[in-house]
Length: 212
Image 1 (cartoon, rainbow, N blue to C red):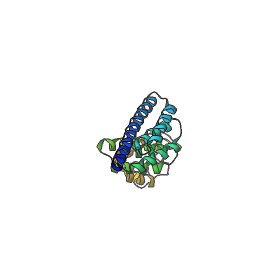
Image 2: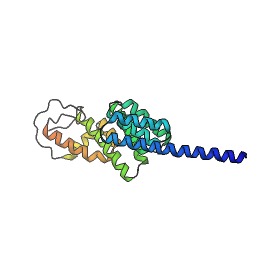
Image 3: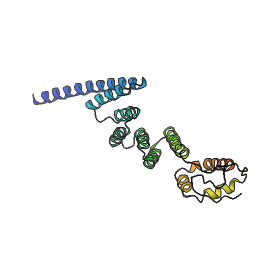
Image 4: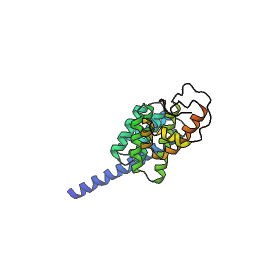
């Protein structure tokens, strides 16, 4: 009789778990649909309801994090991503969205470090996404640099001179150490910039030693 009671209880628990799984999946699908329709707050509410039923599913946290980013709440989004990573430490998607939230919070270096951890765990397709986003961060940082005293100058054909000069710049050394695949890309940009402006302008906003 005791065994029958235990079996009955186990069956009831299983039925409840199955019901909860269906409910969570339904809420998740509705949340995804709301997100696709740009109803971000509705999506947040739906993901939150799903999390209240099952707070061990990392996907629910990263989905809510994306919606939180859309309504301008990067701090809350970062917390959701960190929770997802507690549940699944190798969850590449959580690393990527955490990096996006950190960037919005002004924590650019931590965002880059987070992407590097993701890159170590990513498959080929995911790694491509991570590298692309790292490049976007770098390009945005580059756009924020100001060039002073710009004036016409002759075209510098000797790219080797530019390369040698850039290699002495601390920021260039740091960037290319972090992103080796960007070395030639930066040199090409620097060659163009120097050709169109004063040779005394440093690519990273520092005084350089390129001479006419």
